Length: 517
Image (cartoon, rainbow, N blue to C red; front, top):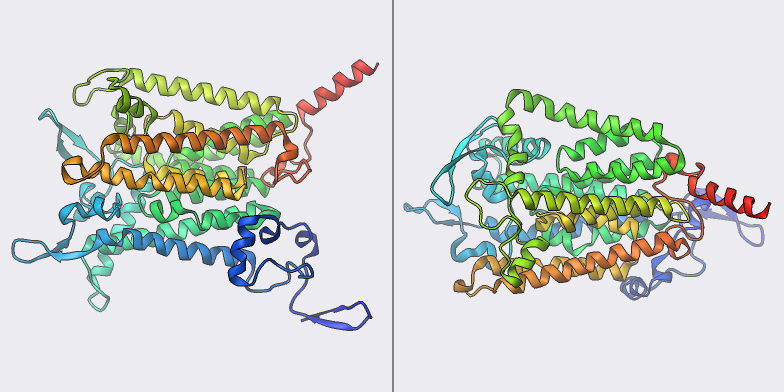
């Protein structure tokens, strides 16, 4: 207990030290945001004018946000629970997963983790990248297959399988089908990873800590939190950004590299860092981070690449041979126009060379435009703004936008553009795409939806993401409208960049001085 004097000089008991430095400037959504103000009526209304912020010892804003994340992760698990229902489906009444009647689509509970348990031969206890099998193509030819995920994602699946088999071997524990236990083990790890993502976002948000509630309570968490393994990469990505904000470039690089060994997208962060470090003359720090990222990625990948080169290369082979996925803009054009694609009909195993080249060139153009924006903005852009633009540009120009990839954007969008109603509208649109997707996969013959219902929803989602990018660019060139800066030039994720000389600002001052002379 501490004491504080009141206006008459009497000592008043206080439950803890008041953190006046951060509390005085903290954003209070129940006062400043109409939506949050309305929602706060459930718990008594907006915080009072005389409330002392930052004094609570235990039930802090961070813990409240993490509790909210746990609630939404539970919603996410229940959304997938229909796909791990057991029933006597075997010829002799043996228990198995009940996916009768295309349950995975009708109940909209599909998760990659369930079919991958058998497809990746995890049910056999196989070690990823070592185990191979033959798969029959559409034309009747065969293809030797291996684990198709980057190394850390593959090893995570293998580790979850081992834990699941240990669980099933202990008879005193509640028992279920091995794939069900495996799914729950995977889901538990993904839930922890998303909590780490929420924690890192909350810390990185600084005075606007409550913005992280949008990450915790995103509709996309319910739909895609357990669809695939992307929460792992998000945890590495956000903790990497947080490490950079804490002026620890080596740790930032290591975490970004580990994220790239899980899903490649965190490695894209090195581009925005390069632009900002060049603008502030901090190229040494960028070099340290880049080398640490490459070193961490190599440390994870080299052992597998040397021991099982064919298995390690499978991820890259598969992605080079994939055509335009249903979610891509290229397939949207095909869906509405009948366009055969850049490469036309391809035989099984052929690479869509023109499509691959086009996606690479378009993304390179996007990166060049973002680099120009980052170099010419009147005030150095915030790191989260450029990172969001790069990742969004990658998804929009790529030939693959798997539904769970949208999770990548959630924490980045919150840190880049914390306008709650706008972000909630985009997240709701993006989450809604899951419904026509599942009923499109169900097939029209099974009372599903025509393809254009799904691709039309994809168009709406892409327009929403493009709109977010436009708003971020607008605020880069009009920093006075940026809620994060709050009228200052501070970047909560700036790290070593904060306080550094700005080439653009210095050049402008020199020009003005020359004119005055």
